Length: 457
Ligand code: ARG
Image (cartoon, rainbow, N blue to C red; front, top):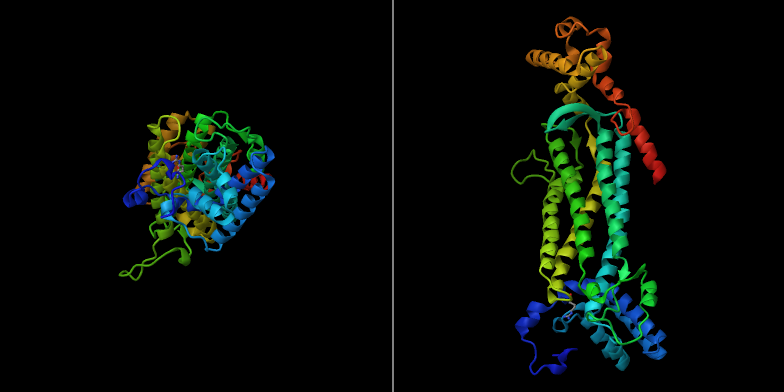
């Protein structure tokens, strides 16, 4: 067994069971890049203030560079008995460069080290997610443009409500994901301060230059309070909350796609390569991808809950509990990333069955409100118009036809105010075209919204 880096005061070595129980290198090894970047900045700072010689600092920076290369090439031996990513890398550095390696940890604790690594990591993750979200938003914009005139039923209570365009529906999805993007950027802004320098909890005796380190690592500033700096995991929670909302949105889209892809709706076909078959029923084409996204939303929401509960009982400052922040955070990162990737790939290949969408909109008396509004324009109070149209709907339902399929004589039975011009209002196209203002579903407005979006990006 290599000697523990903290072994000085111990009379016996750690139990093998405890090593297995408490290690984190099996999952925090993924922080190696951030850990190395942070250590290099710290070493440069120590040299700048004269605590390290320039030669030692150079040896550290170069030694870490070599370790980085070996890790990336899969040549690095991670050791469980060295507990975590930090001590694995530091021990290897010392093995390679000798005493200079032992000087690296001057004025630093693993508590502010891990806090720094984690902030760098979450920041890197956000920077990788933003272009992915942009791809999804762009795909939705293209699909909205393709289907700007496609009539489909809009739903409330999952009952047919009023006609909308498919394009309008896609732009609604896009609004959700754009809010998610701004939430991530918000989170990034708040978290982008350097905790290093807090040391274990109280700061350090060395005349450190935290701003110099912050600048090297791309932080906007430094944390204000050392106790807070080593114990704060708000940013991980905020990230997981933002990721949970992304998954909530993707899960809602999934639910709609799953419904729309059943022959009962028949609104869309998903590409074969995004679906799977049944081992017994030869006819099946199952929407497993959206189903899995819907399912994975549960995991990500669970991870957020795990982090909130992890933190709620902790006194200041660092507690080892914090090590448990990593599995839920990393799982959230992996899950949100692959779900966004899958949607970015799938959306451009969703085939919309325009005839089915249209037939569904025509079936549900979706223009009943338009008929009521027509009567209001002819002078009838809205409540009376609502009642008259309700009777007309009951009549058409009995005849098993749409409102627009009733003759003028039939319609007149429900109100003498109805005249031949009614048909321009109660067709699907008439209904859509009439909702012609900023943010509404008229094809012209959908096109205007798309044009605004394209100008913005
Ligand atoms: N692996 C630890 C973590 O993830 C690093 C910090 C350990 N600090 C300590 N005092 N034991 O939080």
